[in-house]
Image (cartoon, rainbow, N blue to C red; front, side):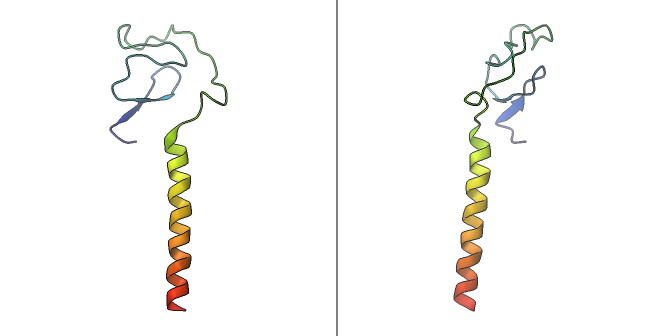
Length: 74
């Protein structure tokens, strides 16, 4: 995982390195990422993470580049 992100110790949500609390379970920096935080499963909108879409985008770009290179050399 990139050094720009870390997993919430309680619910495993991916958070930015400078996050002071987890919006999903309520753990925070002040309480030491408490295990007593209330945990709720995220909804579809809350589970959005740009890294997932970036990975999909990069795979599509790679596939297009491979097809373009093959078209040039064949």
